[in-house]
Image (cartoon, rainbow, N blue to C red; front, side):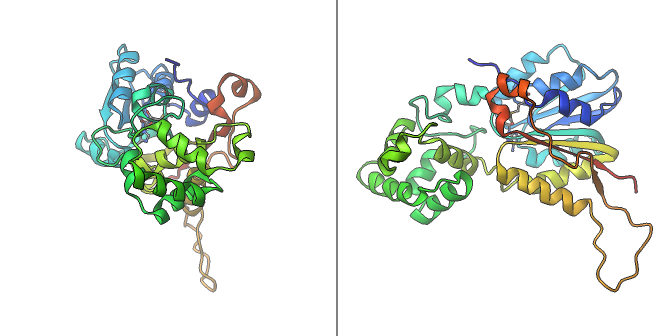
Length: 308
Ligand SMILES: C[S@@+](CC[C@H](N)C(=O)[O-])C[C@H]1O[C@@H](n2cnc3c(N)ncnc32)[C@H](O)[C@@H]1O
């Protein structure tokens, strides 16, 4: 299995401005790449690592077992503030979100994330969750399928793919990744099938985002993370999808701006909750792009909490 190569590692660590005695939270532990880099810079500091995927927790814990100041927590990061509060951790120096999927999730055929392997339709990061790709493909209405393929997958053939799914599943339920790939191919014109790139890529991405509620929970999770930061604490977010990046960009703009209603005299002492550390989004350099395919769509934004 391919090892997960951490994306924008050097840039993220630099911009987090690690305090060796500080408390850090990795909201997306995955293979533990970013966590390992942070832990190796800590002396008295501590790192808490969240992942909703039991296999990620197992793998990262193995990799990081030499660090006594590391604590893995198997949970969705939407619950991080609560879970950390139970441990009396309410103020931290730095937080990282490296969103999306780990390489091993794609590479384990039975997880059903990949169109490259024939497997039951699944795509759940948290395998205790009820909703999976099978339920979506076989139960969602035409309108629901069309919306997720169009919005989350930016699939311009969303309608014809949704139509084809409805037709196929009325004959026999669509149970596997390859049955879904076949159905998608049947809905696409030849010119699309001859293009570079896999014809099912966009639909698989959309399904994964829907199964794991990836966009729905992001804004609240980021707000909670900012609440957790100490003054001067930093938050780094790596996104892989334009909609994810848009959520971060809008939220950071909102929280780093003081809106003064017209006609109201300026209140001099007012400062916004956060400031953006990098005004321009950070992307991978040529060297990283040639080593790591996943780095192509990666965007890093970092903010710092202001002192009140
Ligand atoms: C891109 S990988 C992180 C890789 C990691 N930074 C590394 O260097 O190895 C994203 C990980 O976040 C996890 N994840 C995604 N959304 C999550 C959520 N809402 N709560 C907890 N974990 C999540 C996934 O299961 C996956 O293992």
